[in-house]
Length: 206
Image (tube, rainbow, N blue to C red; front, side, top):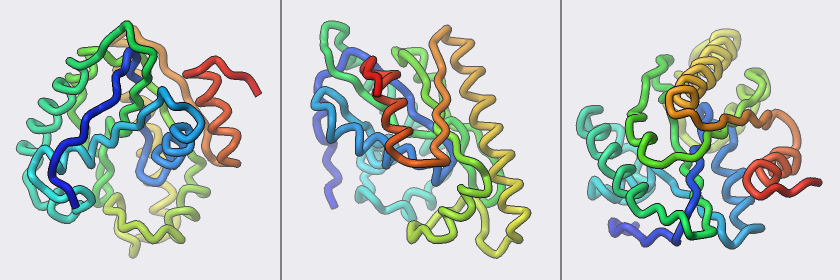
C-alpha cells in the first residue's frame, strides 16, 4: 500500500457526503465517478492514513492512534485540501467522510471546523434501520460501530439513533454555514440514489 498522497484533480465545487457506517455513500460516489469525468470522490479516511504515515486501508492501525492526534491531523488535511479550491474549475469534489463517528455503540462527534473553508453543500445518505442492519449482517467489511454480539433490536435501535444524530448534526452545520442540505434515501435500488445525486450535482433528470 502507498503512503504517498496522490494529487487531486482541479475542482471548483465541494460537497460533503456523509451518513452512518454502511449507508452506501462510498458505493454511490464510486458509481457516480464512472459516469462523470469531472467528479472525484475524496476518501477522507484513506487520505488521513496516508497523512499519518499509515498504509492506506490499514484501519486497525488508524484505530490504535489517539483521537486528539487523528482529529488534529484530519483538520489540517481538510484545510489543505479546501485551500486548493479553484472557483473557475468545473470539477466537483465529493468528500466522503463522517460528521458523527459510530464506535462501540457510541456516537462521537468528528472535527467539522474545516468545513467553513469552502464546502458548498451537504448530502446525507440515509437507510432504513432494519435494512441497514440486514446489509451489515452480510457485509464482509469489519465495522466497529456496534458489537455484532448485541441483540438485533439493540442494533436496529442504535442505527436509528445514530442516523438521527448524523442528520441533526448535518443540519446544524448547514445552518451555521448557510449552505444547502439534501437527504438521499438509499434504502431501495442503487439507481434511484444515483439519479438523486445526478439531479443534485449535475442538474440531470431521469
